[in-house]
Length: 447
Image 1: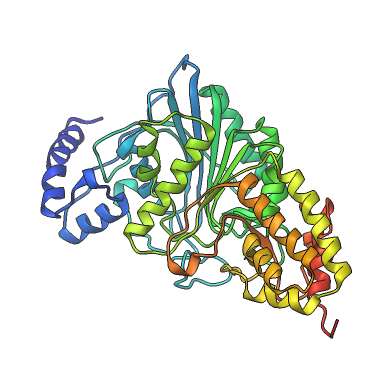
Image 2 (image 1 turned 180 degrees about the vertical axis):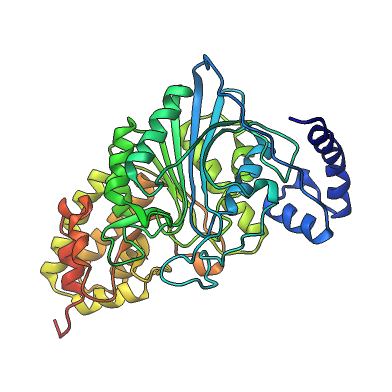
């Protein structure tokens, strides 16, 4: 690094507290990097340059955890990659934790399918939103280290590569690479990008879910997500920093390859997780899978609560998903045999719906079904099934906002019309009768 650049960085770092003071920001009270950068730019402060690449560490000791973040910004979320890595650097992680990131960026984000429009998560392209020194493109792998620089990412760059981040096999390769380079007793994988539950944003891509790479036009399906986790040898925690992914159909694809799943039933705001709110909570807790997942849930809810923005976020165990499937099959058989289609259809329409308009809260639907049925047996079974989800599956749920008071942590596919035939390709559909139930439910006519 040249002397002038070093001098610039040192001087700039000295001014960070002054900038923060001028902007009336108290970092001890918690602030997002996104908010800091926005305020700093409006005040006219210049960013510092990024550091050059560093060689990867050799002979890394086995730690308790390695957190792997697959940050696919090869779309119109590209600028949020810099914000989120800066949030990670703000707090760092405990000494016995590795934090590694693969981040992808493109020069000017094209519109996300089908058009570019100002939507809750789908933001307009903003090619000048990040500092020029951070506007690199391509795919990089970082070992995240704590710093005091709230603008530039200074963590060492381990690799630069070309990659299709919509390819599940590349996701698997990232997991295998991270496990080899940074071995640990436990692993967490976070997939960061757009999400759409079990479905694609484009009907031309059936059964797709997450990680849209706009350079290649590919994304990773729910089935492929399970394949990626299997190929990398599984993880202790899987998390989606993406919209609409906390669905039973997605969880069922992953149940054999992870113990805990974190995600949102609803769209996430474009900024996604505030990583300093999550990672900061890891400093003084027992690092069990449940505690780490709950830290992610509580941190997300706290940040957006402070922003007065409605969100959903939950964590669930996968160990009882097979039992959940068995109980759901029994419930469906009883409901269809009783034939109260119009009552159950009404329960569906009144249950909490999320932004892809075909995803509804599973417990809310069952509670409404119990209230509407004329059968004491179906009422009892509906409440038993809802209770099983609450006590055996969802263990942390922290929605924020009055509109999400009935978001209980696990969504399920309930379309307005005849179900998408590609739904039958999912493990959840193959193992049970939910596809038959939602097809029956949408039929018109009297009972």
